[in-house]
Length: 143
Image 1 (cartoon, rainbow, N blue to C red):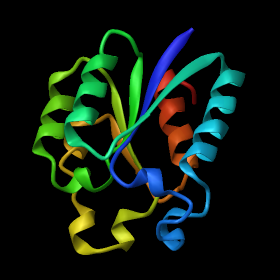
Image 2 (image 1 turned 90 degrees about the vertical axis):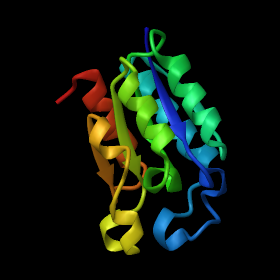
Image 3 (image 1 turned 135 degrees about the horizontal axis):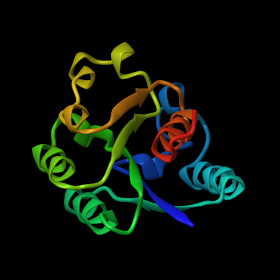
Image 4 (image 1 turned 120 degrees about the vertical axis):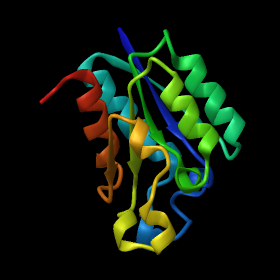
């Protein structure tokens, strides 16, 4: 069974109560349960990890290389500040799709630039939890 990493960055553990106007009211646990059910129907396995620590995100990506077919990464605020996370993605032989729940282009100016974007397969933003499914469909080669 194909395995994919779903990696969540800082403050995503607060989903459901953190700025619901941008991020919605669904908790991270509920979103992961919904994604796991969706993946099970497609015959794939998802491995979920969330961290507020940059190094843990890097270690999770490095650990996925060779074990997972790809990764969906919501780097949270690290998208705009982490050269180390960007360099990790660039160094790995692991396809990564960057996802953001909110539309970064409709928010503060500093959020409109992602350091990770140039080294990922693509960026999906503003579609809420559906963005994760679209990213996984791309990684799986589904239309």
